Image 1 (spheres, rainbow, N blue to C red):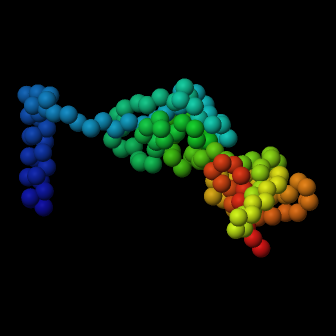
Image 2 (cartoon, rainbow, N blue to C red):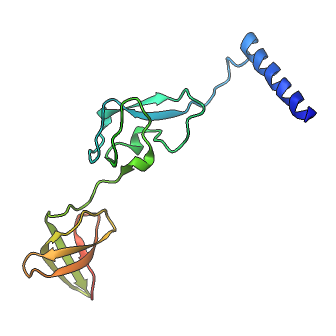
Image 3 (cartoon, one colour):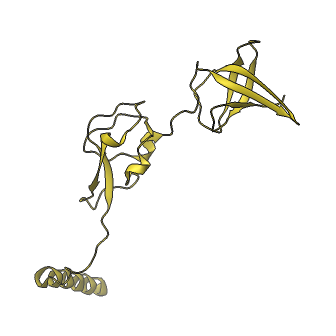
Length: 158
């Protein structure tokens, strides 16, 4: 217990010496930054670069989990309302959907050297890599497939 008091006392003396003598003037301290909206951003909006600013974090008690660079935020879609001047929690953002429900997609099915393609309508919104159900426009049959990066749906064999 006595050791802790002595250690705390020495830390206060060192801080006082740095402040009064300017000993820390040449030291570079890492600044923490945060991304904050410049206006209200509503759920479902895609965040653009002009809607956010990067600011220095001055509150040392700020809990983590917030976006620190614009690259983490720009192009993402909000899950909840983001208020101006408040940090943006990373959990309140998601990737943009690769395919949208009710839109049009190209269905592909490959077996060996044979490739079959058709037009379809996704029954749900989905990200790249998601398995979704799609209605074949020509036959009306509902098939399952994986959303690919180019926006097509690779149909699974039954």
